Length: 516
Image: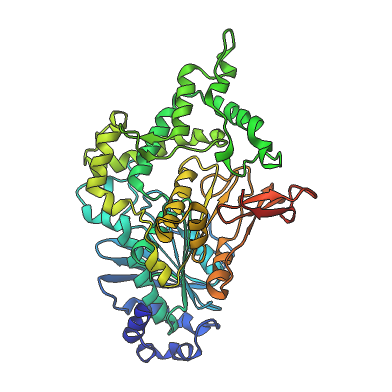
Protein backbone atom coordinates (compact mmCIF):
# COMPACT_ATOMS: atom_id res chain seq x y z
CA UNK A 1 0.00 0.00 0.00
CA UNK A 2 1.12 3.56 -0.66
CA UNK A 3 0.84 4.67 2.95
CA UNK A 4 2.68 1.65 4.32
CA UNK A 5 5.44 2.09 1.76
CA UNK A 6 5.85 5.75 2.71
CA UNK A 7 5.83 4.94 6.41
CA UNK A 8 8.43 2.21 6.00
CA UNK A 9 10.74 4.55 4.10
CA UNK A 10 10.42 7.24 6.75
CA UNK A 11 10.62 5.02 9.80
CA UNK A 12 12.61 2.01 8.63
CA UNK A 13 14.19 -0.54 10.96
CA UNK A 14 17.59 1.11 10.51
CA UNK A 15 16.37 4.21 12.34
CA UNK A 16 15.00 2.34 15.35
CA UNK A 17 16.86 2.20 18.58
CA UNK A 18 19.02 -0.83 19.21
CA UNK A 19 16.59 -2.28 21.75
CA UNK A 20 13.96 -2.52 19.04
CA UNK A 21 16.15 -3.92 16.29
CA UNK A 22 15.47 -7.57 17.12
CA UNK A 23 11.74 -6.97 17.03
CA UNK A 24 12.17 -5.35 13.64
CA UNK A 25 13.64 -8.54 12.23
CA UNK A 26 11.06 -10.77 13.84
CA UNK A 27 7.99 -9.47 12.00
CA UNK A 28 4.43 -9.01 13.26
CA UNK A 29 2.49 -11.32 15.51
CA UNK A 30 5.21 -12.40 17.96
CA UNK A 31 5.96 -11.32 21.52
CA UNK A 32 7.58 -7.87 21.56
CA UNK A 33 8.58 -7.85 25.22
CA UNK A 34 11.82 -5.97 24.51
CA UNK A 35 9.79 -3.10 23.01
CA UNK A 36 8.68 -2.15 26.52
CA UNK A 37 12.06 -0.49 27.00
CA UNK A 38 11.53 1.67 23.96
CA UNK A 39 8.10 3.07 24.75
CA UNK A 40 9.45 6.31 26.20
CA UNK A 41 11.65 6.74 23.14
CA UNK A 42 8.56 7.40 21.02
CA UNK A 43 8.45 10.94 22.45
CA UNK A 44 11.28 11.82 20.07
CA UNK A 45 9.35 10.62 17.01
CA UNK A 46 8.87 13.37 14.42
CA UNK A 47 5.58 13.32 12.52
CA UNK A 48 4.15 16.02 10.25
CA UNK A 49 2.00 18.57 12.12
CA UNK A 50 2.09 16.34 15.19
CA UNK A 51 3.54 16.54 18.68
CA UNK A 52 4.03 13.40 20.77
CA UNK A 53 2.94 14.54 24.23
CA UNK A 54 3.86 11.42 26.17
CA UNK A 55 4.70 7.75 25.83
CA UNK A 56 4.56 5.60 28.93
CA UNK A 57 4.54 1.91 29.75
CA UNK A 58 1.39 0.63 31.48
CA UNK A 59 2.07 -2.76 32.99
CA UNK A 60 -1.57 -3.87 33.38
CA UNK A 61 -3.78 -5.64 34.28
CA UNK A 62 -5.61 -2.49 35.40
CA UNK A 63 -5.51 1.12 34.25
CA UNK A 64 -7.51 4.09 35.50
CA UNK A 65 -8.08 6.64 32.72
CA UNK A 66 -7.68 10.35 33.53
CA UNK A 67 -10.70 11.61 35.43
CA UNK A 68 -12.28 8.15 35.74
CA UNK A 69 -13.47 6.71 39.05
CA UNK A 70 -13.08 3.07 38.08
CA UNK A 71 -10.18 1.20 36.56
CA UNK A 72 -10.26 -0.73 33.30
CA UNK A 73 -9.43 -4.35 34.10
CA UNK A 74 -7.98 -7.42 32.37
CA UNK A 75 -5.55 -5.40 30.27
CA UNK A 76 -2.25 -6.65 28.89
CA UNK A 77 0.81 -4.50 29.31
CA UNK A 78 0.89 -1.73 26.72
CA UNK A 79 2.69 1.40 25.61
CA UNK A 80 0.35 4.36 25.92
CA UNK A 81 1.10 7.15 23.45
CA UNK A 82 -0.62 10.55 23.57
CA UNK A 83 -0.25 12.98 20.67
CA UNK A 84 -1.76 16.18 19.29
CA UNK A 85 -2.24 16.74 15.55
CA UNK A 86 -2.67 20.35 14.43
CA UNK A 87 -4.70 22.27 15.16
CA UNK A 88 -5.83 20.36 18.27
CA UNK A 89 -6.75 16.76 17.43
CA UNK A 90 -5.87 14.65 20.43
CA UNK A 91 -5.21 10.97 19.86
CA UNK A 92 -4.10 8.06 21.97
CA UNK A 93 -2.48 4.93 20.61
CA UNK A 94 -2.19 1.83 22.78
CA UNK A 95 0.44 -0.69 21.72
CA UNK A 96 0.48 -4.19 23.27
CA UNK A 97 3.92 -5.01 24.66
CA UNK A 98 3.55 -8.70 23.86
CA UNK A 99 1.58 -10.83 21.41
CA UNK A 100 0.71 -8.00 19.06
CA UNK A 101 -1.41 -9.54 16.30
CA UNK A 102 0.23 -7.43 13.61
CA UNK A 103 -2.94 -5.40 13.05
CA UNK A 104 -4.16 -1.86 13.71
CA UNK A 105 -7.63 -0.88 14.92
CA UNK A 106 -9.13 2.58 14.70
CA UNK A 107 -12.11 3.20 16.97
CA UNK A 108 -14.99 5.66 17.03
CA UNK A 109 -16.97 7.56 19.64
CA UNK A 110 -20.38 9.09 20.26
CA UNK A 111 -22.15 12.45 19.94
CA UNK A 112 -19.73 15.24 19.20
CA UNK A 113 -17.19 13.43 21.37
CA UNK A 114 -14.62 15.85 22.81
CA UNK A 115 -12.82 13.16 24.80
CA UNK A 116 -10.80 10.00 24.30
CA UNK A 117 -12.97 6.87 24.68
CA UNK A 118 -10.79 4.64 26.84
CA UNK A 119 -13.15 1.67 26.81
CA UNK A 120 -12.65 1.39 23.05
CA UNK A 121 -8.88 1.42 23.46
CA UNK A 122 -9.14 -1.23 26.17
CA UNK A 123 -11.29 -3.50 24.01
CA UNK A 124 -8.74 -3.26 21.20
CA UNK A 125 -5.63 -4.14 23.18
CA UNK A 126 -7.45 -7.02 24.91
CA UNK A 127 -7.73 -8.50 21.41
CA UNK A 128 -4.03 -7.79 20.80
CA UNK A 129 -4.58 -4.91 18.38
CA UNK A 130 -2.55 -1.73 18.29
CA UNK A 131 -5.52 0.58 18.89
CA UNK A 132 -6.22 4.30 18.53
CA UNK A 133 -8.94 6.76 19.47
CA UNK A 134 -9.40 10.51 19.03
CA UNK A 135 -11.38 13.33 20.63
CA UNK A 136 -12.25 14.51 17.07
CA UNK A 137 -10.30 17.75 17.47
CA UNK A 138 -11.98 19.57 20.34
CA UNK A 139 -12.79 19.31 24.03
CA UNK A 140 -16.22 18.40 25.39
CA UNK A 141 -18.32 21.54 25.88
CA UNK A 142 -21.45 20.14 27.56
CA UNK A 143 -24.13 21.26 28.22
CA UNK A 144 -23.79 22.91 24.79
CA UNK A 145 -22.14 20.05 22.85
CA UNK A 146 -21.03 22.10 19.84
CA UNK A 147 -20.13 25.47 21.34
CA UNK A 148 -16.52 24.62 20.45
CA UNK A 149 -17.53 25.25 16.82
CA UNK A 150 -18.41 28.92 17.33
CA UNK A 151 -15.92 30.93 15.27
CA UNK A 152 -13.91 27.82 14.39
CA UNK A 153 -14.94 26.39 11.01
CA UNK A 154 -11.67 24.43 10.89
CA UNK A 155 -12.79 22.41 13.90
CA UNK A 156 -16.06 21.53 12.15
CA UNK A 157 -13.97 20.08 9.31
CA UNK A 158 -12.01 18.02 11.83
CA UNK A 159 -15.26 16.70 13.30
CA UNK A 160 -16.73 16.12 9.86
CA UNK A 161 -13.97 13.97 8.39
CA UNK A 162 -10.38 15.07 9.02
CA UNK A 163 -9.73 13.92 12.60
CA UNK A 164 -10.34 10.21 12.01
CA UNK A 165 -8.26 10.22 8.82
CA UNK A 166 -5.36 12.00 10.46
CA UNK A 167 -5.56 9.61 13.40
CA UNK A 168 -5.28 6.65 11.02
CA UNK A 169 -2.23 8.10 9.27
CA UNK A 170 -0.35 9.10 12.42
CA UNK A 171 -1.29 6.03 14.43
CA UNK A 172 0.01 3.72 11.72
CA UNK A 173 3.30 5.61 11.70
CA UNK A 174 3.56 5.22 15.47
CA UNK A 175 2.76 1.51 15.18
CA UNK A 176 5.40 1.06 12.48
CA UNK A 177 8.05 2.81 14.51
CA UNK A 178 7.31 0.90 17.69
CA UNK A 179 7.19 -2.59 16.20
CA UNK A 180 9.48 -2.07 13.24
CA UNK A 181 6.76 -3.31 10.91
CA UNK A 182 3.74 -1.64 9.40
CA UNK A 183 0.41 -3.18 10.41
CA UNK A 184 -0.44 -5.93 7.96
CA UNK A 185 -4.15 -5.12 8.19
CA UNK A 186 -6.23 -2.22 9.50
CA UNK A 187 -9.76 -2.28 10.87
CA UNK A 188 -12.19 0.36 12.10
CA UNK A 189 -15.02 -0.26 14.53
CA UNK A 190 -17.59 2.27 15.71
CA UNK A 191 -21.24 2.83 16.52
CA UNK A 192 -23.46 5.93 16.43
CA UNK A 193 -21.05 8.77 15.66
CA UNK A 194 -18.47 6.01 15.35
CA UNK A 195 -20.63 4.43 12.64
CA UNK A 196 -20.78 7.79 10.86
CA UNK A 197 -16.98 8.05 11.16
CA UNK A 198 -16.52 4.57 9.73
CA UNK A 199 -18.70 5.32 6.70
CA UNK A 200 -16.91 8.62 6.22
CA UNK A 201 -13.62 6.74 6.07
CA UNK A 202 -15.02 4.33 3.47
CA UNK A 203 -16.38 7.19 1.35
CA UNK A 204 -13.53 9.70 1.59
CA UNK A 205 -10.41 7.70 2.49
CA UNK A 206 -10.98 4.21 1.07
CA UNK A 207 -7.41 3.02 1.63
CA UNK A 208 -7.24 3.80 5.35
CA UNK A 209 -8.89 0.52 6.39
CA UNK A 210 -9.19 -3.01 5.05
CA UNK A 211 -12.39 -3.57 6.98
CA UNK A 212 -14.95 -1.30 8.64
CA UNK A 213 -17.77 -1.94 11.10
CA UNK A 214 -20.34 0.86 11.14
CA UNK A 215 -23.09 0.37 13.70
CA UNK A 216 -26.19 2.59 13.89
CA UNK A 217 -24.40 5.24 11.81
CA UNK A 218 -25.25 8.85 12.66
CA UNK A 219 -24.62 9.89 9.06
CA UNK A 220 -26.27 12.69 7.11
CA UNK A 221 -25.95 14.62 10.36
CA UNK A 222 -27.94 17.70 9.42
CA UNK A 223 -30.96 15.67 8.38
CA UNK A 224 -30.57 13.31 11.34
CA UNK A 225 -30.53 16.21 13.79
CA UNK A 226 -33.50 17.89 12.12
CA UNK A 227 -35.37 14.58 12.26
CA UNK A 228 -34.43 14.16 15.92
CA UNK A 229 -35.85 17.59 16.74
CA UNK A 230 -39.01 16.53 14.91
CA UNK A 231 -39.40 13.34 16.96
CA UNK A 232 -38.37 15.11 20.19
CA UNK A 233 -41.15 17.66 19.83
CA UNK A 234 -43.67 15.00 18.83
CA UNK A 235 -42.73 12.70 21.72
CA UNK A 236 -43.23 15.54 24.20
CA UNK A 237 -46.92 15.59 23.23
CA UNK A 238 -47.42 11.97 24.36
CA UNK A 239 -47.82 11.17 28.06
CA UNK A 240 -44.83 9.13 29.16
CA UNK A 241 -46.75 6.06 30.47
CA UNK A 242 -48.42 5.68 27.08
CA UNK A 243 -45.24 4.74 25.24
CA UNK A 244 -45.39 1.25 26.76
CA UNK A 245 -49.12 1.14 26.06
CA UNK A 246 -48.41 1.76 22.38
CA UNK A 247 -45.71 -0.91 22.16
CA UNK A 248 -48.00 -3.44 23.82
CA UNK A 249 -50.68 -2.69 21.22
CA UNK A 250 -48.17 -3.04 18.38
CA UNK A 251 -46.97 -6.38 19.72
CA UNK A 252 -50.48 -7.66 20.25
CA UNK A 253 -51.18 -7.02 16.58
CA UNK A 254 -47.89 -7.91 14.91
CA UNK A 255 -45.64 -10.02 17.14
CA UNK A 256 -46.79 -13.43 15.88
CA UNK A 257 -46.74 -12.44 12.19
CA UNK A 258 -43.13 -13.62 11.78
CA UNK A 259 -44.01 -17.10 13.06
CA UNK A 260 -42.80 -16.67 16.63
CA UNK A 261 -44.50 -14.83 19.47
CA UNK A 262 -41.43 -13.66 21.32
CA UNK A 263 -41.79 -9.93 21.95
CA UNK A 264 -39.73 -9.09 18.85
CA UNK A 265 -40.56 -7.95 15.33
CA UNK A 266 -38.21 -9.55 12.80
CA UNK A 267 -39.01 -6.75 10.35
CA UNK A 268 -41.13 -3.92 11.81
CA UNK A 269 -41.87 -2.59 8.33
CA UNK A 270 -44.39 -5.42 7.85
CA UNK A 271 -46.46 -4.23 10.84
CA UNK A 272 -49.49 -2.15 9.80
CA UNK A 273 -50.50 -0.88 13.23
CA UNK A 274 -52.03 2.61 12.97
CA UNK A 275 -52.19 5.21 15.76
CA UNK A 276 -55.96 5.55 15.31
CA UNK A 277 -56.37 2.04 16.70
CA UNK A 278 -55.62 3.43 20.17
CA UNK A 279 -57.71 6.59 19.79
CA UNK A 280 -59.91 7.34 22.80
CA UNK A 281 -63.56 6.47 22.40
CA UNK A 282 -66.46 8.27 24.01
CA UNK A 283 -66.42 7.80 27.77
CA UNK A 284 -63.02 6.07 27.79
CA UNK A 285 -60.40 7.17 30.32
CA UNK A 286 -57.57 8.95 28.51
CA UNK A 287 -55.07 7.01 30.63
CA UNK A 288 -55.72 3.89 28.51
CA UNK A 289 -55.94 5.45 25.06
CA UNK A 290 -54.54 8.24 22.89
CA UNK A 291 -56.00 11.72 22.72
CA UNK A 292 -56.32 13.35 19.28
CA UNK A 293 -53.08 15.27 19.85
CA UNK A 294 -51.30 12.07 20.84
CA UNK A 295 -52.60 10.23 17.79
CA UNK A 296 -51.25 13.02 15.59
CA UNK A 297 -47.90 13.07 17.38
CA UNK A 298 -47.46 9.31 17.03
CA UNK A 299 -48.30 9.52 13.33
CA UNK A 300 -45.64 12.23 12.97
CA UNK A 301 -43.08 9.88 14.55
CA UNK A 302 -43.97 7.04 12.19
CA UNK A 303 -44.17 9.25 9.09
CA UNK A 304 -40.91 11.13 9.58
CA UNK A 305 -39.92 14.61 8.54
CA UNK A 306 -40.83 16.04 5.12
CA UNK A 307 -40.46 19.45 3.55
CA UNK A 308 -43.31 21.54 2.20
CA UNK A 309 -43.11 19.67 -1.13
CA UNK A 310 -43.60 16.38 0.75
CA UNK A 311 -40.05 15.29 -0.02
CA UNK A 312 -38.41 13.30 2.81
CA UNK A 313 -35.87 15.05 5.00
CA UNK A 314 -35.49 12.16 7.45
CA UNK A 315 -37.45 8.90 7.72
CA UNK A 316 -39.76 8.03 10.57
CA UNK A 317 -39.18 5.49 13.30
CA UNK A 318 -40.39 1.88 12.94
CA UNK A 319 -43.17 0.28 14.95
CA UNK A 320 -42.37 -1.64 18.11
CA UNK A 321 -39.81 0.69 19.70
CA UNK A 322 -42.26 3.16 21.24
CA UNK A 323 -41.30 2.05 24.76
CA UNK A 324 -37.80 3.44 24.07
CA UNK A 325 -38.93 6.78 22.61
CA UNK A 326 -38.91 8.38 26.06
CA UNK A 327 -35.15 8.64 25.49
CA UNK A 328 -35.72 11.10 22.67
CA UNK A 329 -37.20 13.52 25.21
CA UNK A 330 -34.02 13.54 27.30
CA UNK A 331 -32.41 16.99 27.63
CA UNK A 332 -29.03 15.78 26.34
CA UNK A 333 -30.63 14.65 23.06
CA UNK A 334 -32.20 18.04 22.41
CA UNK A 335 -28.96 19.76 23.46
CA UNK A 336 -26.86 17.75 21.00
CA UNK A 337 -29.04 18.18 17.93
CA UNK A 338 -29.87 21.80 18.73
CA UNK A 339 -26.18 22.65 18.97
CA UNK A 340 -25.69 21.72 15.30
CA UNK A 341 -28.07 24.47 14.24
CA UNK A 342 -27.39 27.15 16.81
CA UNK A 343 -23.59 26.83 16.98
CA UNK A 344 -22.66 25.66 13.50
CA UNK A 345 -25.41 26.88 11.19
CA UNK A 346 -26.72 30.10 12.77
CA UNK A 347 -23.72 30.75 15.05
CA UNK A 348 -26.18 32.05 17.61
CA UNK A 349 -25.97 30.51 21.12
CA UNK A 350 -29.44 31.92 21.89
CA UNK A 351 -31.22 30.18 19.01
CA UNK A 352 -34.31 28.29 20.22
CA UNK A 353 -35.02 24.98 18.50
CA UNK A 354 -38.76 25.44 19.02
CA UNK A 355 -38.56 28.10 16.28
CA UNK A 356 -37.05 25.79 13.65
CA UNK A 357 -38.40 26.09 10.11
CA UNK A 358 -37.61 22.71 8.61
CA UNK A 359 -37.78 23.87 5.00
CA UNK A 360 -35.70 27.01 5.28
CA UNK A 361 -33.31 25.98 8.05
CA UNK A 362 -32.42 22.54 6.69
CA UNK A 363 -31.74 24.03 3.26
CA UNK A 364 -29.51 26.65 4.84
CA UNK A 365 -27.67 24.02 6.87
CA UNK A 366 -27.16 21.78 3.84
CA UNK A 367 -25.80 24.68 1.81
CA UNK A 368 -23.41 25.78 4.53
CA UNK A 369 -22.24 22.49 6.05
CA UNK A 370 -23.67 19.58 4.07
CA UNK A 371 -20.42 18.89 2.23
CA UNK A 372 -18.63 18.63 5.57
CA UNK A 373 -21.11 16.87 7.83
CA UNK A 374 -23.60 14.83 5.82
CA UNK A 375 -21.24 12.15 4.42
CA UNK A 376 -23.93 9.91 2.95
CA UNK A 377 -22.50 9.28 -0.50
CA UNK A 378 -23.46 5.89 -1.96
CA UNK A 379 -20.30 5.87 -4.08
CA UNK A 380 -18.17 3.21 -2.39
CA UNK A 381 -16.48 2.14 -5.60
CA UNK A 382 -12.98 3.09 -4.47
CA UNK A 383 -13.39 1.29 -1.16
CA UNK A 384 -14.56 -1.78 -3.05
CA UNK A 385 -11.66 -1.55 -5.54
CA UNK A 386 -9.22 -1.31 -2.64
CA UNK A 387 -10.53 -4.64 -1.39
CA UNK A 388 -12.33 -3.15 1.61
CA UNK A 389 -15.12 -4.96 3.43
CA UNK A 390 -17.94 -3.15 5.24
CA UNK A 391 -20.31 -4.52 7.87
CA UNK A 392 -23.25 -2.25 8.63
CA UNK A 393 -25.59 -3.06 11.50
CA UNK A 394 -28.48 -1.38 13.28
CA UNK A 395 -30.92 -2.26 16.05
CA UNK A 396 -34.55 -2.07 14.94
CA UNK A 397 -35.49 -0.60 18.36
CA UNK A 398 -33.02 2.30 18.18
CA UNK A 399 -34.87 5.41 19.43
CA UNK A 400 -32.04 7.87 18.70
CA UNK A 401 -31.19 7.07 15.07
CA UNK A 402 -33.85 5.61 12.81
CA UNK A 403 -32.99 2.13 11.59
CA UNK A 404 -34.97 2.97 8.46
CA UNK A 405 -32.30 5.50 7.54
CA UNK A 406 -29.57 2.86 7.55
CA UNK A 407 -31.73 0.50 5.48
CA UNK A 408 -32.32 3.37 3.07
CA UNK A 409 -28.61 4.10 2.78
CA UNK A 410 -27.78 0.46 2.11
CA UNK A 411 -30.40 0.37 -0.63
CA UNK A 412 -28.97 3.57 -2.08
CA UNK A 413 -25.48 2.06 -2.22
CA UNK A 414 -26.86 -1.06 -3.88
CA UNK A 415 -28.82 0.94 -6.45
CA UNK A 416 -25.84 3.18 -7.23
CA UNK A 417 -23.40 0.33 -7.76
CA UNK A 418 -25.76 -2.04 -9.54
CA UNK A 419 -26.95 0.54 -12.04
CA UNK A 420 -30.36 1.97 -12.94
CA UNK A 421 -31.66 -1.19 -14.65
CA UNK A 422 -31.22 -3.51 -11.68
CA UNK A 423 -34.20 -4.30 -9.49
CA UNK A 424 -33.92 -4.06 -5.69
CA UNK A 425 -33.16 -7.74 -5.10
CA UNK A 426 -30.54 -7.88 -7.84
CA UNK A 427 -28.95 -4.67 -6.61
CA UNK A 428 -28.67 -5.91 -3.03
CA UNK A 429 -27.11 -9.18 -4.13
CA UNK A 430 -24.65 -7.31 -6.34
CA UNK A 431 -23.01 -5.47 -3.43
CA UNK A 432 -22.78 -8.34 -0.96
CA UNK A 433 -19.27 -9.16 -2.13
CA UNK A 434 -18.01 -6.20 -0.08
CA UNK A 435 -20.78 -4.83 2.13
CA UNK A 436 -23.50 -6.46 4.23
CA UNK A 437 -26.15 -5.04 6.51
CA UNK A 438 -27.37 -6.83 9.64
CA UNK A 439 -30.58 -5.67 11.31
CA UNK A 440 -31.02 -6.61 14.98
CA UNK A 441 -34.62 -7.05 16.22
CA UNK A 442 -35.33 -5.64 19.67
CA UNK A 443 -31.96 -3.91 19.99
CA UNK A 444 -31.72 -0.30 21.15
CA UNK A 445 -29.07 2.31 20.29
CA UNK A 446 -25.73 0.50 19.90
CA UNK A 447 -26.89 -2.26 22.26
CA UNK A 448 -29.33 -3.04 25.03
CA UNK A 449 -33.02 -3.72 24.55
CA UNK A 450 -35.13 -6.87 24.85
CA UNK A 451 -33.66 -8.56 21.77
CA UNK A 452 -30.43 -10.53 21.39
CA UNK A 453 -28.08 -7.57 21.76
CA UNK A 454 -24.59 -9.06 22.17
CA UNK A 455 -22.69 -10.18 19.06
CA UNK A 456 -19.16 -10.20 17.66
CA UNK A 457 -19.00 -8.27 14.42
CA UNK A 458 -15.20 -7.96 14.56
CA UNK A 459 -14.60 -11.71 14.31
CA UNK A 460 -17.02 -11.84 11.38
CA UNK A 461 -15.14 -9.01 9.67
CA UNK A 462 -11.74 -10.61 10.31
CA UNK A 463 -12.93 -13.88 8.78
CA UNK A 464 -14.22 -12.01 5.74
CA UNK A 465 -11.12 -9.90 5.16
CA UNK A 466 -8.50 -12.51 6.07
CA UNK A 467 -10.11 -15.71 4.80
CA UNK A 468 -12.57 -14.53 2.17
CA UNK A 469 -15.58 -15.97 4.01
CA UNK A 470 -18.44 -13.47 3.95
CA UNK A 471 -20.71 -13.57 7.02
CA UNK A 472 -23.86 -15.55 6.25
CA UNK A 473 -25.13 -15.08 9.82
CA UNK A 474 -23.90 -13.55 13.06
CA UNK A 475 -25.07 -15.20 16.26
CA UNK A 476 -26.47 -12.76 18.82
CA UNK A 477 -27.39 -13.47 22.42
CA UNK A 478 -29.50 -11.94 25.18
CA UNK A 479 -28.67 -12.31 28.85
CA UNK A 480 -30.57 -11.78 32.08
CA UNK A 481 -28.48 -11.29 35.21
CA UNK A 482 -25.44 -12.58 33.38
CA UNK A 483 -27.07 -15.78 32.12
CA UNK A 484 -27.72 -16.22 28.38
CA UNK A 485 -31.43 -16.91 27.89
CA UNK A 486 -31.82 -16.48 24.13
CA UNK A 487 -29.72 -16.72 20.99
CA UNK A 488 -30.78 -15.75 17.50
CA UNK A 489 -29.01 -15.34 14.16
CA UNK A 490 -28.66 -11.88 12.63
CA UNK A 491 -29.04 -12.24 8.88
CA UNK A 492 -27.61 -10.25 5.97
CA UNK A 493 -30.28 -7.88 4.66
CA UNK A 494 -32.81 -8.45 3.15
CA UNK A 495 -32.91 -11.86 4.84
CA UNK A 496 -34.51 -12.31 8.26
CA UNK A 497 -34.25 -15.06 10.85
CA UNK A 498 -37.13 -17.53 10.28
CA UNK A 499 -38.11 -20.24 12.73
CA UNK A 500 -37.67 -23.76 11.35
CA UNK A 501 -40.80 -25.01 13.11
CA UNK A 502 -39.35 -27.20 15.85
CA UNK A 503 -37.13 -26.85 18.88
CA UNK A 504 -36.73 -23.96 21.29
CA UNK A 505 -37.41 -20.53 19.86
CA UNK A 506 -34.66 -19.27 22.17
CA UNK A 507 -31.99 -21.28 20.32
CA UNK A 508 -30.37 -19.83 17.20
CA UNK A 509 -29.85 -23.35 15.84
CA UNK A 510 -33.58 -23.56 15.16
CA UNK A 511 -33.63 -20.54 12.84
CA UNK A 512 -32.58 -20.06 9.22
CA UNK A 513 -31.83 -16.89 7.29
CA UNK A 514 -34.43 -16.48 4.56
CA UNK A 515 -35.57 -13.78 2.18
CA UNK A 516 -39.21 -12.86 2.96
